[in-house]
Image (cartoon, rainbow, N blue to C red; front, side):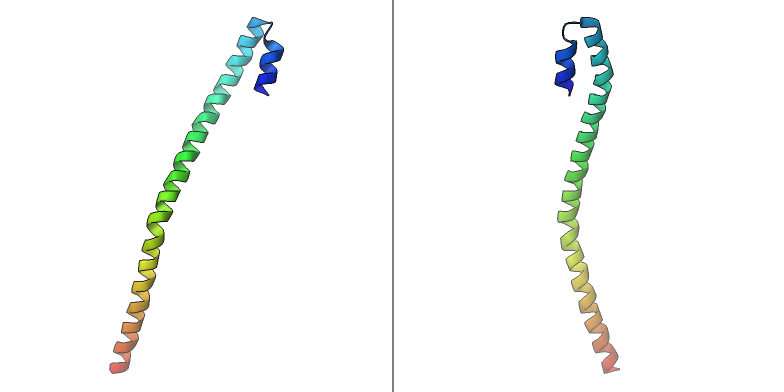
Length: 76
């Protein structure tokens, strides 16, 4: 789409400059959003890699704790 606008407005320099001024903030906003989404995806990957084993450890500790509490309840 931008290439089509560039081809249409190439002969007229002022209108090309105006269209560039209109599109540049949009392009900058899109670039910022892409960078932010990349950082979020990377942080979620790190979080998933770190949290998943911790969830497994918590589940193991809870099941062991339940078994010990049942064992202690039976002995009394």
